[in-house]
Each structure stands twice: as C-alpha cells, then as structure tokens.
Image 1 (cartoon, helix red, strand yellow):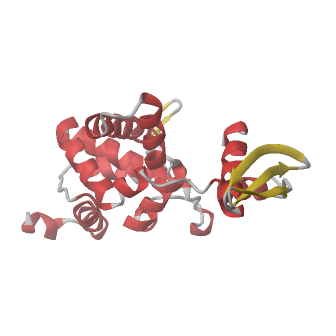
Image 2 (cartoon, rainbow, N blue to C red):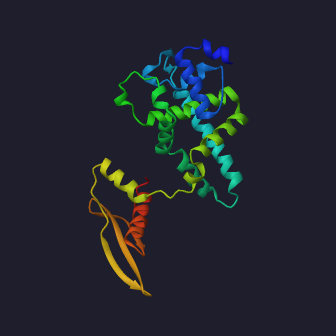
Image 3 (cartoon, rainbow, N blue to C red):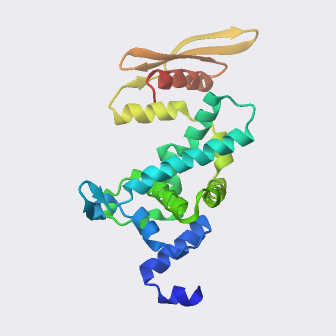
Length: 235
C-alpha cells in the first residue's frame, strides 16, 4: 500500500487520505470516488442526457442513507411509532445537516466544479456527501457500508441530532426573511394561573395568524406558536 501511495498523483493521494480520515476506509476504486466529487458543471456527457457527474451516485447514496438510518432507528427505538421514527430520521438527512457535515470533513476543497468557488452553493456539499456514500456502497457492499456510515454519523453527532429539538422560531424567521414576509410574535394574553404565568402568543405572518402558542414564558409560547405555523406552512 505504501508503494502504491507513492505512485499516485497528488490529487489521488489527497482523495485516499480524505477517505481514510473522513470514513476510515481505503480503496483502489478511485474512479467511483472521483465521480462522487465531480459536480455536473465539471462533468462530460457520456450518453444523451447522462453525464459522469455525481448526480446518479447522489441518488443512490440518498437511498442507502435512508435504508441504514431506518434500520438503525427500528433496532434502537422499539417504542417509537412510524411517524416518530420518520421525524427522527429527517433531522439527520435534512439538507442543512448534511451540508454542515460535508463542510466539516473538507468536501469543499475536493469538489470538482467549473464555477467560481464563491458561487459554490452549500447544497453541493451535502449532495457530494450522499454521492460518496453511494460510491462506498458500490465499492464495499451493503453490510460494510452500513457499518461505515453508522460509524461516520455517530462521530458527527447522530444521537444528538436525532434528539435535537428543532428551533421552530429560528426556522420561521429564516423562511420569512428569505421569502420577504413580515413575521411577528405579539403577546395577546398574559394571566396568572394558580400563581404561575401563562402567556398566549400569536405567530403572525403578513398580518395573518398562522400559529397560536401558550406557555409559562414568552419564549416557550413563541416556540409553540412557531411550530404550529411551520406545520401549517409545511416547512
């Protein structure tokens, strides 16, 4: 392996080192991983409508991740319903989480693109991560990939992510700013119930009530109202 490493060009050496550090694997099938890190802008057309980009591997990797996480949740959370497990899985595979992990492991520096680095969209990192996992599956088979992927996600906060409560208010603020909506959380009632405060707050978007929340503090009531609004808007 050492002599083989010496014969590799710098780009392949960087890829091999990346696979060892990020996924704890080694391989001689460089073409799979090179393709996984090749954005459509840098790809060549092989057949009509088909390019040697990472898009097909991304499709495969997405399905493999879903399968592995579904298996994991089924085994580790026997008391959870189908709906609860779906929500837990969605926290791991949601785009912002995969983008964050892709950035952390250094995909940005390895991604082959024909656009300016300043134009590199964050979603490209998450897409490439999915493509890499598709490549691992084709290289190693399902059982080995399952162990590799679970180890990878555990090292990147799988348990914490599954049990993390999504900040609905921040999510709603981000969506409102992005889509140029006016968002407010007015207190419509504050009363004492058995010596404790109870706040009622509305989540209002462009003058319309989208959510109503109650809680012992403004912050908790806002989160309830924001969560209701997010569910209504299917965010």
